[in-house]
Length: 123
Image (cartoon, rainbow, N blue to C red; front, side):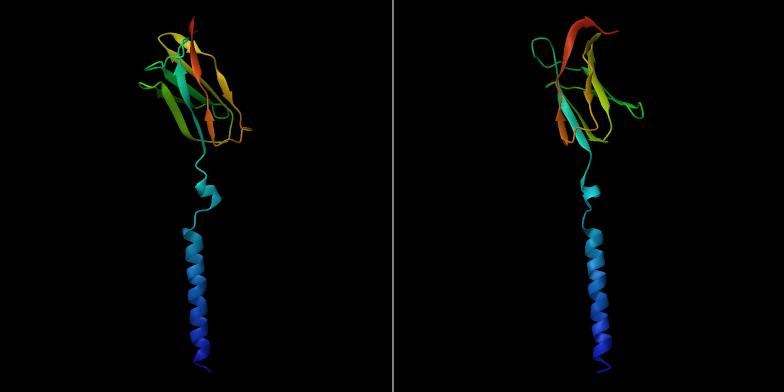
């Protein structure tokens, strides 16, 4: 009977270690969440893509600004955004879009916003 107890405790210890390793390897919900994605198109007044427009994204908490230069399709994307307020606008050849807001209270993981370049001059 003395031999059975050490074997049982070794098996129990092995089970605890296996459980701990499995729990460590399993992704936590925090790890799984990669932040929000803001994406969309930069368009002219006729809804055509504006190639080489620059999109400006401002984090309203830190005032950090990220930029994105759009390609042939006029698409932009900012992945991995924190849950804070942002402002976004586009600029091309001295013309600017209206500034749009992304609220920290918007719980969507993907937010699509088209930015339309106006015919007026940018300030």
